[in-house]
Length: 124
Image 1: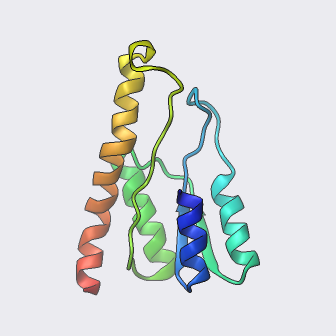
Image 2: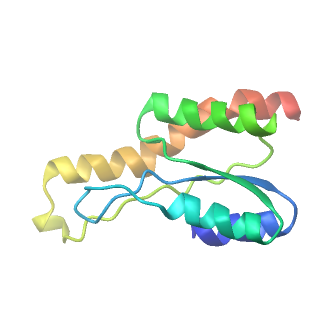
């Protein structure tokens, strides 16, 4: 969904920050997905930048918002759709993996909103 949102908004003139920490289903490695999406945006004449911060951590969410402000000066729209997949049924998923899913899906959303909201409120 993130790629679709980014391309759709950039095609309509939005300046887009594409965030993805990346990784495999097992949680290892990194991803080139943000750069790939940004390259599509730039190729089509839009404006975008990649961010690889971990939004499940307060500092990562804060860094994401800071980068957005540094590069584009403001935050007008925020789409929180960070998510991870652990290819396991509930009974096979360890509690550590379950906690990580909650950190990314729930706390990642809270941390990004908490970082961006004061700035967005100033923009009205």
